[in-house]
Every structure is written in structure tokens, then in C-alpha cells.
Image (cartoon, rainbow, N blue to C red):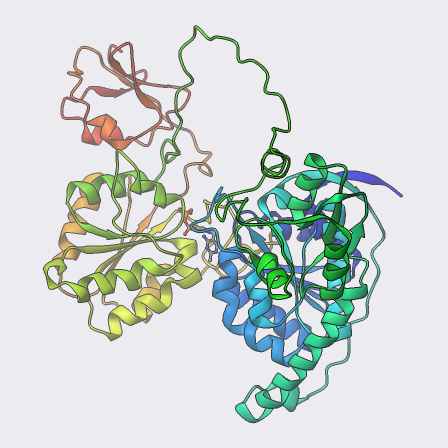
Length: 584
Ligand SMILES: Cc1ncc(C[n+]2csc(CCOP(=O)(O)OP(=O)(O)O)c2C)c(N)n1
């Protein structure tokens, strides 16, 4: 059997392929994005980016009820968006198996919060599996689908950044073709009106007790007896931390993190002198173990925030570090400069936030590359909550304080607009708001690595498709004032924002310019004319990484400049010039 290194995300994709998955859907989000990007490489699986996670799950539900084996993937916060169908899908159950991958991000490497997805399994009364390396990630996709079909339930598979993005060895298997199950109409099972829902809730509770019995005997949950002085309960990446830090300790490893096997826990607890539970974020397992009347140490030692590590496990349980730190040699050199995240050189979003700050507007922000516009020196954002919140929260800002009338601008990216901006805009029109919405249309989902969306004209598989036009959609939603503007033209952008904020009715500016990283066309490069530059620092206010001070003088780094020419528009001394022009 061929073994190869795979990230957890690649392994999940491989698991879907080998388990005969027919259909997969997702909305991108770190750390889950590469699951669908890798599934798309298998011709046998029909895979799609959906416009958001609720849609992805709903399309997946339809495909499951039709008889296909299905995988749906999202990041942890995506489950919030998909929670509505998930809760009721638990009642209907499946036809073809469905696995829902939720990738958590403890430590918030790239997320707006640190929520613990395990609560969703409990809330939905659906089982959740949790792999501790890539090999398990692959295997568990097939097991999850088998459980899904045997127990007639959606099954969740929890990953985390360290599992999704780290590589480990995976043994490759063949694809097992699973026939699509026949579709039969069954309204009592699939139409969740109250009368049928009540009946299904009973089925869900019966299913839960069967799943508890399954968890007791599943080989995914196992006791590894070693030294009995210390016993640790762990799942997922924490299992690896425990094995590295405490190789002698007995371990109860869970591959099913919900529901928990109570008898197995009691047996393990009775067999060790001291019992610990090591888990990231919430005391999800700890609280359930405590509720069984078993004394266990968990969050009194380990944090509720951020990631756990092998060193932390050693320090907290053994009371000593895992490694003796090497002496750090004295350094004469300059300290390594801080590199805070910034918008790329030539990013179309830069001029927007420069202008919004200049006009002292109240900016209701959203999530995407453009959220970087909130940081110094641009500082052009007042709020940012979750995807899609910009437009609706913008309306709320205006409704909540009449002093803000005519000052509120909502800023949303193109992918985010399709994800969850449309309903907010409908609300603005319906409820007689007057905010200006800027749709920052860089023609792609840039933040997560350039995924297609309903406005780009291409599917996940690379097939050409309809490209939905944002301006037309806004007009169809009842916005009368809709214009397109180029963010590289600062004067036109500023004039349009001034005009539209004064309009007293809902308006949309589609700020259109391709992501600078995708624009491969010929580029001019700019430089500073040192005779004209008076070091006023105005160009530095753009926060362009290509512009910096070198030996006290403003300088354009030719290797970074992409020739957007936004900086020359803010320079009052015409001191930024095209390389090759004049005497510079
Ligand atoms: C519910 C949810 N799903 C996914 C994400 C991950 N994510 C953050 S922003 C974003 C899309 C950004 O694309 P776009 O709106 O086009 O802005 P751009 O990054 O291109 O500027 C995604 C997928 C998230 N934060 N929350």
C-alpha cells in the first residue's frame, strides 16, 4: 500500500474519494478551504463552492436525500451560518450518508472568534468524530459516512488548524464505488412540519442512546494502558501533545468526541491514580466527566483560550518543561522588525479606506482582505462582527443614533456580498435606510486564496458559468442609486462617496478593480524624485508596503511596487514619478 505525506485537509479529501463520496460542497474559510480544493481534483466527485455555508449544507442535504454520499466542509464559524438546516436535518436523517466537516481555529490564526464546534454536535444531537492526524482524518471520513447511513444521522467531523494544515503519513487505498441509493418520497421523514417533527424528535432521542452504546464499543475510542499513576483523556491534536509530553502515561483516546462513552471513562478513571483531561477551548469533555461524578483535573490547569502544546502539557502535569531551552546567543544585530499584516502593494482596497478616513465617515466593516483597512495607518473601519454584518449593522448604526445620519458607510467584499450581504441590503431598502454600501469587487474571494464565487464566471471545477452582476442585483433589490467606480481613481472615488452619503436614500457603489495579485498585466513602477520630495509623509498614510523610509528618506521599493499610482494622487509635490520619466 502506497504511503504518502498529506495535510489533514488533503487526507479528508482523499477519504471522501475512497469512501465513494458522490457530491461535495463548501464555502471557503481557513483552516478548511483546501478540503474542497483537493476534492475538486477527483473527477469522480461532483464538487462546488456554494455561496455560503447554509447553502452548502442545504445543497448537501438535498444530495443526501436524493441518495448520494455527501461531504460538506466549512470553518467553525461557518457552522453558525449552517446551524439552521443542521438542527432540523438531524431530525430528518439522511438517505445517502452525509459528513459535515467543521474546522476549528483555536488560537485564532485566521478567524474572528475561537468558538468550540463540539457544542454543535451536542446541540444537533449528532455524533462527532475527531481525528488526531492525517491518517485518521482520511479513515474517519469513511467511518463517518458508514455511521451516518447505519444510524440515519448527519455526522460531524471536527478538525482544527493543526490537524488540517500539518502533514503526516497516509496509506492510500482504492476508491470504493458506492451506488447512489434510490430516492423514495417519505414526507413523514423529510417534511418537518410540527406533526412530523414531533415524531422525528423521538427517533432522534432513541438514536442518541444507540449512538452512546456504539461509542462504548467503537475501536475509535480506546484505552492505552501504560503507567497507571497518571491517566489522561484526550482527543484530536491534544492526544499527540499528551503522547509527546507524557509517553509513559495511560491514555483514553477518543476518536468520537460526542457522545462520550461513560462506561469506558469510568473504567479508565478507576484504573489510574490521577485523572486529567487535556482539551482545547471549552471544558466540553471535562464537564460531562464531572457530571458522571468522576474527579478530573482539566481547566484548573489548562487555558480556556488559545492552543494547547506538548510543552504546556509537560509543564502543567509534570511540573517541568518538555525541553531544556537552549541558551540564546547574545545578538549584536538589530532586532527583527515587526511585520504586522498589511494590504498588498497595489491592493484596490487601500484607496477606499484612505478616502473613508479622510472623510471621517462611520464605517461598518465586514470580513475579508479589506478588514486590514482597520489597522494603522488607514484605520478606516468602526465595526466588524461577522460575514455579512456590514450592511445590516450599518443600518442599525443609522437607526440607533440619528446623529450618524448621512455618515454611515457599509463596506463589504464581493464574495461576502454573495455570502450574506444581499439580505442586509434588502433590509436597508425595505426599512427606509439611507446608508451608502461600498461593494469592494476585486473579482475573487481573495482572503482565503482566490476561490471563485457566483460573480466570477467560473465554477470550482474550472467550468465557465454565469457571472452574476452585482450592480444589477442591487438595482433588483430596489436600490435606485447604483454606480461603479474605480478605486485607483481617488478623486472620482471621493466625489462619488461624498455625493452618495449626501443622497438621503440607499445607495451602492460597486468599487471595481481586480485583486492586485491576479493582475498579471504590464506594470509601471514608480520612484521618488528626491529633489521634489519634502518628506511630508502624506504617501506613508496609505500604508503601502512598497513605500518606506530608508536612511530617513522616503523610498519606493521597486521590487514591491505594482504601479497602482494611488500614491502619486496623494502627493502634493508631484514627487512620485514613473521610473524612466524625466531625470530620475
Ligand atoms: C462564516 C464565515 N465563513 C467563512 C469565513 C472565511 N472568510 C473570511 S472573509 C472571506 C471572504 C472574503 O472575500 P471577499 O468578500 O471577496 O473579500 P476579499 O478578501 O476578496 O477582499 C471568507 C471566505 C468567515 N470568516 N466566516
